[in-house]
Length: 178
Image 1 (tube, rainbow, N blue to C red):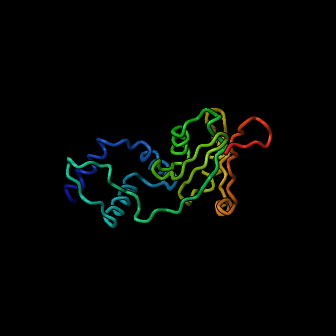
Image 2: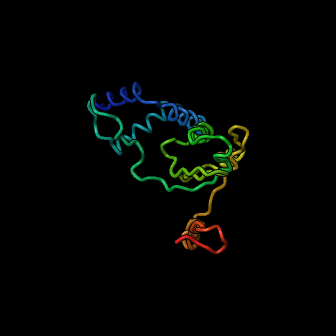
Image 3: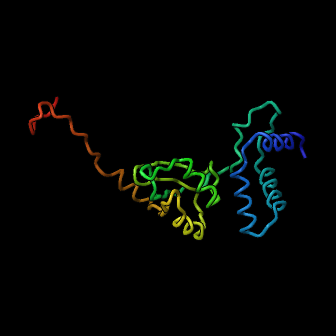
């Protein structure tokens, strides 16, 4: 085994926050009833098939990408929780990481609105996790997650854009500022 690879692994363990990865590994090993060593061996095999460029000890880790070479298809979801519920983006992301085992880096689009939130998650969410997320609560508000139909985005793109009304100039009805 390459010494650079070993150094890279040690550097990651010492310097990076790996809590979400640990949670995902615990979930996967429990779900498939496999040991952490078997899981690590599969990851090592994946690393060897799709190698990451070697690092020196002084090189920053930010540019590393341990994701698969092809990015998964992203699916858009609507969560029935938004700004009016006094929750933050971080709270929602952390809940998804803890409850669904989603890798925080794999959460795509994240648009928090007043009454709801739109997010994109990787394709392939198991149905039991999806149904579980419907009942998960943040600050006593259920997520009520719903998968959005991709055709709704196309329909929205074809709708005419609403024009903003110009301010009223004199306060008389029908008198519009130029």
